[in-house]
Amino acid sequence: MKKTLRRRDLLAGAAAAGTFAILSRTTAAAESTAPGGAPVIPGTDIPLVDYHVHVEAAPTLDKLVEISKARGVKFGIVEHAGTKENKYPVVLGNDEDLKRHIASLEGKPVYKGIQAEFPDWATCFSKEVVAQLDYVLTDALTFREKDGRRVELWKAEKVKIDDPQDFMERYTAFNVEVISTEPIDIFANPTYLPAAVAKDFDALWTPARMKRIIDAAVKHHVAIEISSSRLPRLAFLKMAKEAGAKFSFGSNIRGPNVGKLDYGLERVKALGLKREDIFTAAPPGRKPIQVRKFG
Image 1 (cartoon, rainbow, N blue to C red):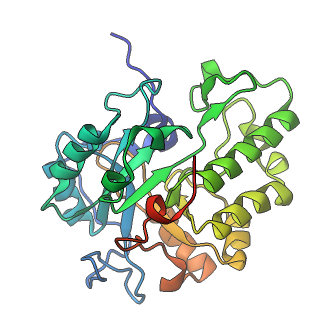
Image 2 (cartoon, helix red, strand yellow; image 1 turned 135 degrees about the vertical axis):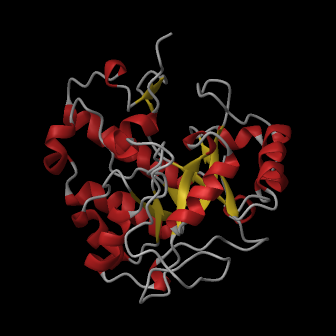
Image 3 (cartoon, rainbow, N blue to C red; image 1 turned 90 degrees about the vertical axis):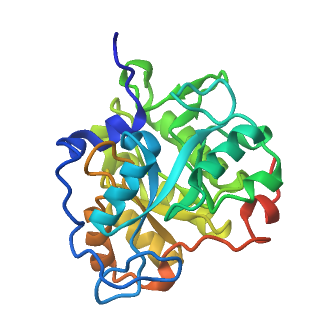
């Protein structure tokens, strides 16, 4: 049976090699903790949290907790959530699904999240149940084409781009739409490009396009994920920091390297990030689902 390629398989690449028996702590893993029980980066008060972890990254949730403790990184656990058009092994599609996901994480030393899929995801759930999550994460990798089709940009065989500039204008606009119109906390996989145009990354991600995404994130109080797939690049991150953006860390890796945040730690040092630059989940009553207008 042919294995289906999933976005985190592509983004993680070789980083997921090895076995679960090989567990090394993240570079400079912390000894002290921040509020919420997260370790902190030594010499700072920045919490070391991987907010982009899927249960299927390990055989069981208990194994993920074991890896989290061994690596010295607190995990935020997400499941894909949205309508039936989204094709994943698990897609939470209604309040009962979401309640079961939340219940499965109760009592575990993890944050509770979802990876929302496509702009219509919020139609599946009540505000009251979504508000029980610590956070909602999403990205723009399931892209809306001109004819309304959902295109999975990480699947090279499904992506055909005849006019890169036209694609980038529409893709940038879609990124801004996702950030501006969805009640989310974290924007993941920022500046990802499909294989068809990735070789022209620096030319296509112009300062003007990057600024549009950053401005939307700052305006709507959405944190920008620093991904272990080594995105965004430093130019984007510098611009985002200067604009006052918040940042989170996410590995989105399957296998023993889940929670490995070396790229994030590199960027903390390069950018001189401080605690106030890092995402903190909104308190009850102030969740995006409760305070933002959407739909």
